Image 1 (spheres, rainbow, N blue to C red):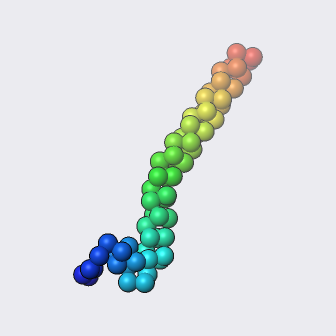
Image 2 (image 1 turned 90 degrees about the vertical axis):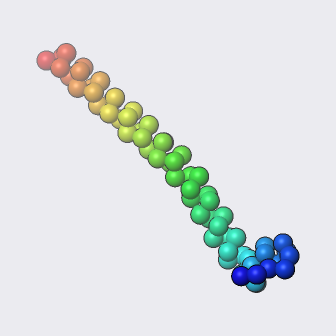
Image 3 (image 1 turned 120 degrees about the vertical axis):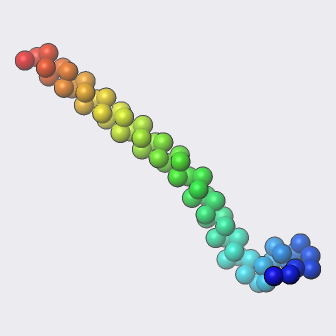
Length: 62
C-alpha cells in the first residue's frame, strides 16, 4: 500500500483499531509468555525439591 503521510499510515485505511489492537495483543502475549513459563518452571522445581525432601525424610524414618 502507498500512504501519503504518517497519519494515513497509522490510520491504516480505517482499520487502525483492528490492526494496532492485534499488534498490541500479540506484543503482550510475546512479553508474557517467557514470564509465565519462568514462573511455571520455578513452581515445578519447588514441588520437586519438596517431594525429594519428603522422600529423604521418609527414608530416614524407616
